[in-house]
Length: 488
Image (cartoon, rainbow, N blue to C red):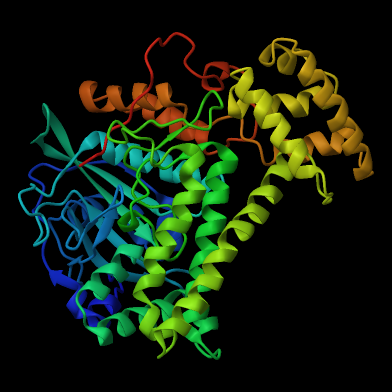
């Protein structure tokens, strides 16, 4: 079996990584393998050879031609700058060309200490591995740009956290692992050629269309802003809360990365926070668009000398792009929200109509996901579900009348509008309590059946299936506020 692998990041920017090797897992067990993704990566041969798969993705064998590296990066963590973070428990094995001729990173997470581990063991508990596998693949099916999960390995040894937990290794696939924090690291090195090398590599890999314009580095920055604005708008449209939007967790490619304390919102509340470490709500649901601009401002600071020789002129040009982020984000968000309530045309009052619905959802403590699915049912005669959600609120009845009037401008039948809504409003999301049930069974009872069932359901989030009613709803029995924890 010959696997073609490249090491372009190492060859292009060796100053921003350190060579390292995985610590072989003592008794690895392959829990799940993503065969469709393997085919996209021209790695379908691995799906037919489980023993080889285990050897490679447990760190016991290095792919021929691979030089594993831990990447260096800095980052603003909850607003405070840390100049030297880096991959403390991850190794980039290299890059593969997928079936479309695009480079894709292959990375092991939880494979042991690296030069950036500091005092950490570089390993991962099995729970965070399975959590990222489940949610990142769900995000992919929902059409949200994301890193992907190729394999999940149980290592056969325990790791010490607050308690002893089974260890795991995840194989992650990404367009690249270049982050806003990567540019911060290069910038703080005060090596201007290093920033240029990183920017040139990023342009070549992600935004080649910006290479030949008059000001390629400004165009590159604008392209990154556009991708991240689109990404956050997508998060907001499905009630997803990343939980830790530090600059080292935001990719320049616009892919969702690092599924630590993330979760999906049940009851609509803009101030929702799930992360146990986000005490002040910096990364709450409603703050995600603001943090988008804050993070991209940090990226802009690293590009000043590349954008123009005159610092004042460079700052002026970059500021002009930064000022466009909010309207660009709003346009993406508004387009997504229009489709969620069945609107295909654009009208001036659409923003007000959507905002009124969200306000009523907050007042009535309505489940975010169920609301939009119930709206399409109401459109074709089944008003019971939506009425129950809004407790027969007269204000909501008034909104429904305005919505129906607005839909009449679409010149499309209610049945077709309802069908279009069901194609963008999922019925099945990774409900927090179902995720926890699946992880508890897998981690503490060596039982992957709940995980595999949930994973299977999430592969078809828009199609209602009889007998799966419990997977549609939030946990109505829990009296405690749901909390998530960083997987480190």
